[in-house]
Length: 396
Image 1 (cartoon, rainbow, N blue to C red):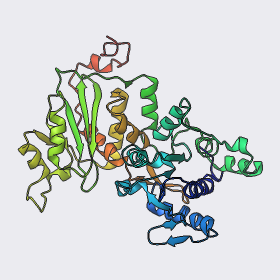
Image 2: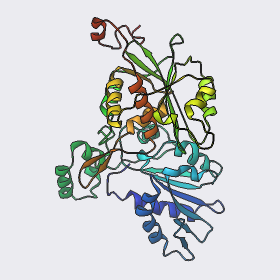
Image 3: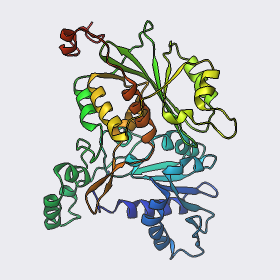
Image 4: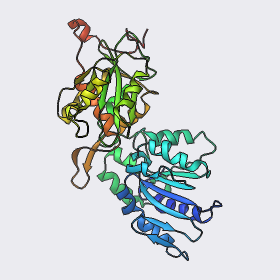
């Protein structure tokens, strides 16, 4: 974990080249994974060509961003925005650059298995972006002797002149400087929509073990992907409390897979909460996904159609009364922590939500929030604060 301009990319690409040239396995393979394929091409490709150019017999493939080395080894660049492309390959070594910006399933579902039979290595590099998967990995590595970890703060390395650090501190926000130069996990992610309300939820211990109440219906709020992920948040409404008890996400599977997943859980379902586009008819079947789900035995309802901005505000209002199961909702919780605004850094302007791996979980939660109906209670009860020491399930 290193501050900006510490040289981590140059160090990592040279380490990868050395590892492939000295690998005892036949035909060694190495991958350099950036959050986006275009980013790998812009940032890493010239370094890879430069540092392999003097090796006798080296060959480069511009179209595949690949370098072939004289011992039969290869180093190739990939983007985590299409990590499924790596399924089925083997790897002896891999670098995951800016892991904080990646879908964590790229590592757990694809990269880690690809290393297994070759007993390969992985190197994660980047700067922090809140308490996401990169933070969790770094935290776990501290206690695991099989992992090496290093943290480089600009105030300690001496790589950047102090005069430059002073100028940067004067032009950056406190959080920006702490995150980018001092590698702070505590600094807020710029533009993260739900950072404050989720921090409050952690402080108030509303993220933890949240049991399912079998006497209350479960509301399943969907974001239906076309060619990418479909997400379902599973929630119970108990008085003015919202309990996020479970989470489902997958891609490349049909609706009947999700129907089986729902039926395999011990829940009684309220009508499924679906977005407006679920009413569109598919060309192949002539049916809408509303009709398909109803044909699979579920009741459905369409979430009110609000702007994305209004939906984000609805989520911000809902989370302060929400309890989240940390284990069953782990992937969804990571996503909404990282869900953030796209920024035009030159003009310092926001450009609406960034569409990446976090978007599907955020959209499904938005549909849940706009579909939520305030329970009809007496005015006095409505004023009563909800807290862990009161008459909630946590306080019993």
